[in-house]
Length: 407
Image (cartoon, rainbow, N blue to C red; front, top):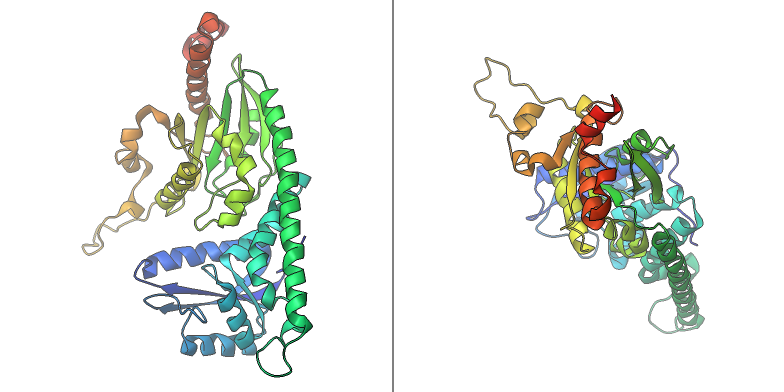
């Protein structure tokens, strides 16, 4: 496995661009997320650079003038790493390293580094390792200084070409080996999933850091690791949960994120099988985040990629305790009201109204509205169960009737 990049206490600079497909507001949002990713990896963001371009420069991603500004700032402020918001091509990364002479990371490399830090089990580490090697393969040419002498011309031909080809073959062999290892683990996990019997399966899905693990802890009374950082959970956790007298299986999966590296989607295919095989999805949303609607779109996009978008879904709007709408003063006649000013009551009258009974507003941290949440999940799981086993529907009465019986 390649060494993970250690960003602990490193001073970093972020770089992004405004293009025809990404306006200034969208860039700022992405850079805020990139700063949170950097913090999660252990870095400290000192400054952010941005530039308006029609498209990224094919050689250095940003223009030469802006690159000089970045270099000057990095040299004067002892910057250890410069992190770019988009994935850099191998050629761009090599060219930028030559100019800045410091560690260069792109969004993909940063996310892979966080995954490398967070992977605890053998299965997760194997998945991350595969993604790392696939990311590394096209970038081998710039990884070792002893290969820098590979240039054209007299006296420059020699064993360097052989050496890098050897390195590439080693990495390809490693990728092949890891894929075989994952196939073996996949078969084992498939057997495990098959051994769970006919219990209804429920999966928590959502953007990273929306509170899935906290919610899992509340309703399953387990102690899944939860932290206010991105990708706190990598390993899928499955727990048996009983609401009233109705048992079902609940799984907590890896969080999604915009611009999720394709290597990770592919290597975490087996982890996402928990989502594919679920009977019901609980799509958890951080309603306190100003861009939660974009997060919903990003999650739906990945669900579409893994062909699970049509499954029965309950929208769980979490963190209502942290939701603070912007306020327009009474004497302010200029500011236009936008979704940023919506209260929860106003949000419920928007497109959320179309979701109808398939939406619930809670705070997993403060356990607000958890009884309503349990009722909604109970009724949804019960419906799936009695459809599958119509002959034992009497075992699980409706939620309110069950309560009456108990009293």
